[in-house]
Length: 319
Image (cartoon, rainbow, N blue to C red; front, side, top):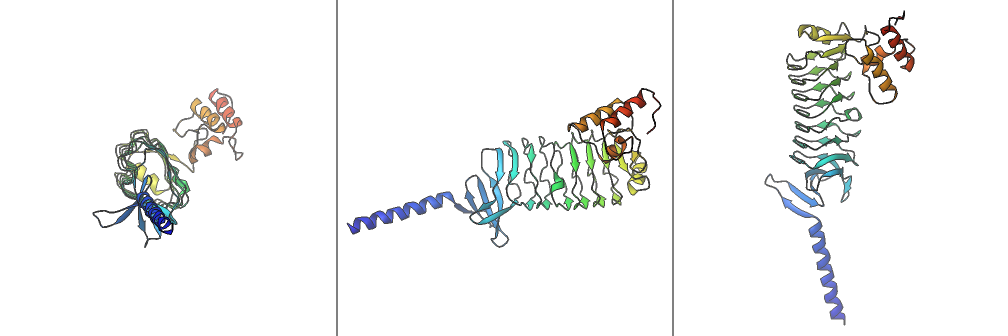
């Protein structure tokens, strides 16, 4: 009886070990790194084995959540080429304090519509989101990214850009060839905008450039719309740059009151912009916010929209 029990126990142990091996398939890649496959993900241990980097996604796509802790290690990085050429992933959310989205992590992910940035994200690699034609927006303000790497969002579908207060540099081709890009707000921490950073963005309308920017490459806005405005202070480096490139300027320190949609004109579209802003359907940039407060009471209300309408109707109204 004891012999039979011993045999059964041995079989059970062997069976259990086999299940564990199947759940975590260890393999060595040509580069010499060792990866572990668990579920939909291929992991690589980094930082001396203390953390995980996602090496490859093998799932079915759709809505994807980045794992937080796997086998007592936290996931802190999406590795280079992790989602390369994936056409099924649509929305990516993070449950972990992600530090890095490495080079070309989402290159040519043409179905990617959203990516959740968190407070810990400090690095977006070269070409990380290049070719993500369905990606309309990404909330970089929640990150601590210090620079926008070369080609980071090149040829993406992004419509508007707001940079975090930690960012100092926008590298070459960072947002070039983005056909839908319309509005850019550069944070007060940025000092330089490199070559072709926003080149060949045919629908770019407004770029807010603060006084902190003291270097803009000659080609930074090559091939952009002739209707583009640089929004800046009148005595800033950006104003001098705009004049040298024949780019129209809207002066933050000398706003055209009533021009709430920041297009250089005051008309019924500005009334609509305020109305849409009040019901949460439209955002106003920094210049638009200043211009919309036509009664100078420190807030934007329906009263401001009414005063603009009265001005357009030739009533004796002064802003």
